Length: 118
Ligand SMILES: [Zn+2]
Ligand SMILES: [Zn+2]
Image (cartoon, rainbow, N blue to C red; front, side):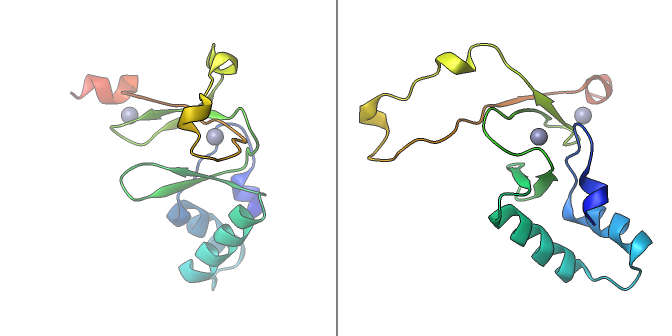
């Protein structure tokens, strides 16, 4: 299952991981795929990108300084390296007592393919 999640800019839905896993293990169920994905996310082996429409994409790139550019039309996701993130500061009054560990910035837009069909 993990081979399906290797490479750059790979952000697969659970359905896509399921389809890939079935090519290797035809009887694997979607529930098993979900359980495995959730375990990997819990262990920090896999990143989870919430698309805002209730669905998630799974991402082999984990760790801090991992930002995304998302097409609101088709859900295409790129890993991006925005400028200026290093300078982002959450003032103490805005931390609500939390120890901040990482920042994730999400840019949303339309890919050229979707813009064409607008
Ligand atoms: Zn698009
Ligand atoms: Zn990513």
